[in-house]
Amino acid sequence: MARTFGYDPGDVSVAVPDGQITYLEVTLVKTAPEKLASIEGVVFKEPNELAVGAHVTLSFPFSSHGMGNTPEMELTTGADGRYRFDGLSLIKYSLAVSASDYAYDSMIITPSAGQAMVKDFKLYRNRKIKLDYVYQADGDRSFTGGKLQSGTLEWGNGHQGLDFSDGRVEEYEHGSERDIEMRQYQGSLKFQIFYVDSKINNGFYDAGAVTFDSVVEAAEKGYDRNAKACVAGHVYVVKTYEGNYAKFIVKEIGIQ
Image 1: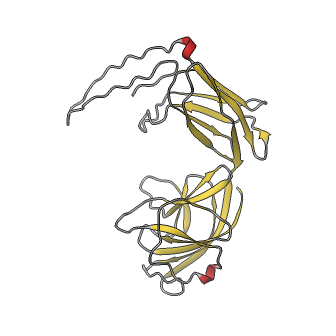
Image 2: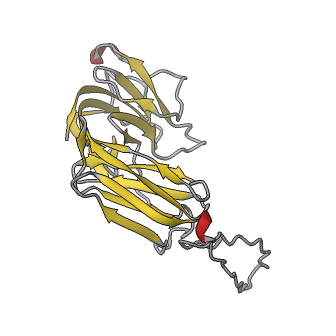
Image 3: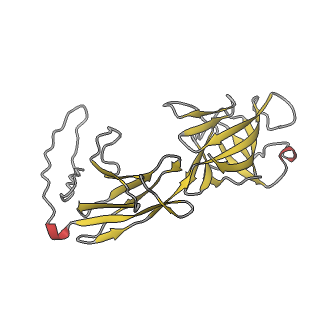
């Protein structure tokens, strides 16, 4: 897979023998001028303001394989909140928009040959939540007795995860064992399991809008790994990475 702006994509299939280095040359052909496309639009900030100084990046998804050398175009929006990228071939692109104190937004997009594609964005302020939790550290499903740990935490949008065994929200590090993550999608927050272990069968469920103390025991079944909406006043029960159980209630959702 070879990608660069203004050229047709170069995709070649190759068989790589075990234990050998395979060298491959790929020749890219310039896209005909009449087939070059553009992507443009306006970036807004909530509630409905023009986003001045938003950072917009256009790159090729999955082309660097984590090596950090993906070709990209980038610009900053002016007073009119507008962005525009010209000279684009008929290729799949990743279009991402970010601004300080706002959750970034992105999409995968493929422009039509010779056409101007219009895509507007709306950025939402970073959200945060406040929660109470109880963690049962001895593998028992009871939340009324045993080796219980409890606390109150604030958790903001970002590359972070909640580890109940440590009782904290922590930044992402390679190999870190976080139980659950939170992601912001525009103005909404969702929870998701960080790491799936089929032996432990970890997961979580939404117990609904019930009082925190009324959830006295974790269920035997009903845990899954699908993302769930973060809802103020709802109680969530988690089977953790260690095979223990935790419950938490979202006390409030606010602006970070």
